[in-house]
Length: 202
Image (tube, rainbow, N blue to C red; front, side):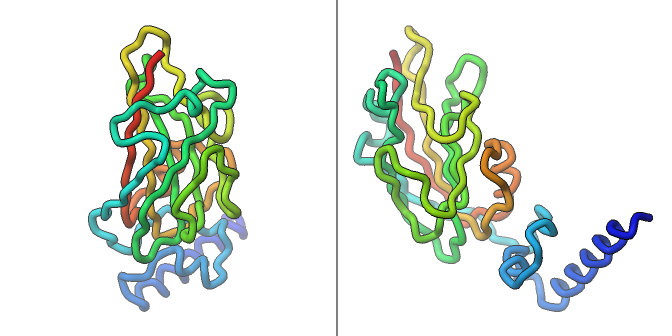
């Protein structure tokens, strides 16, 4: 067996033993915070967080179920991300944001992925810069950052969901991660979540 693999398995065994000795409330993020290298992070859920709580997500640009202004869509040359604000949850280590359109002709279309938003950040201004420490994910336009609503002309207005997740960990993902990768890394680590839905058609 390769020596590096043997060392990896041995270290993993030590971590598991420590977790068992310290009790079921220990979370992988705790070990990382105490100096374990990030490459050793495994997507295990060692703490039962229970059902996620609820966050309230709002925008000064539109209300729940309302029309998203042109400024925040492909109809405008600006195509700015909208202002958003949300509540927090006790124990939050980071937030993640996903915006998608379930009404797209080819299936759910991802417009925006942003993760590792600092726990101290509970709002974004219009056309906001990426908060320090946060990372942009890849959207379905093939770019990083925000891509506004752009449904086919003639379609009934599409629904666009701005979803915020309060997480018990910081995600061990690099810039350019996909929605699927972010969702997989978040699984079992969501303290609370909420969403705001806006509509847009052309």
